[in-house]
Length: 198
Image 1 (cartoon, rainbow, N blue to C red):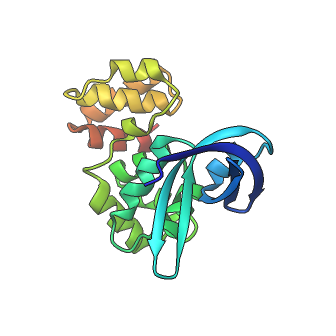
Image 2: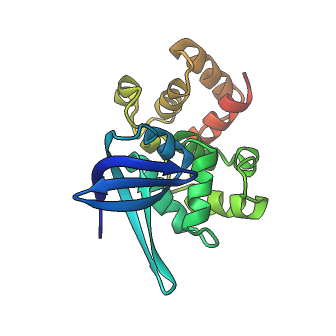
């Protein structure tokens, strides 16, 4: 299996990126996020890949980060979601926001994504809720936030996620304390309450 390709961006159109590597042009199907990352023609880049082999053809999918690829692979495990729909979802929402929407059961955030209906969104939440943590979606930013997160602390997990979304520590703690006062215990419930109540 091809894990990644390093090459020069020679063409970008719609959801396609063409990378030139050793005199071969690889056409990769990408999300809008990855397409933007590859928009500079002539730039050397690395894309993580997923190869789909079917009777009627072979398709190569590209991702600018391992987190995006992992989310894509997680979505493929959900009944009714194929590679094209998964790329469509990743084009409509950031990986981190998608992870948070799944964990908190935010149907509205998911159904705002073009092509994702309510039933599929519900399946996405049902099948991935216990498998995905928003913390796994945090890539190169907020490393200091990650360091304070402890897997056995629901409040620390909620704090890390809220801070990654742009809240300062004081505001994040205020929302968490309010959620606890209102009877929330699990990190999921604390997060859900904190995101809905400002």
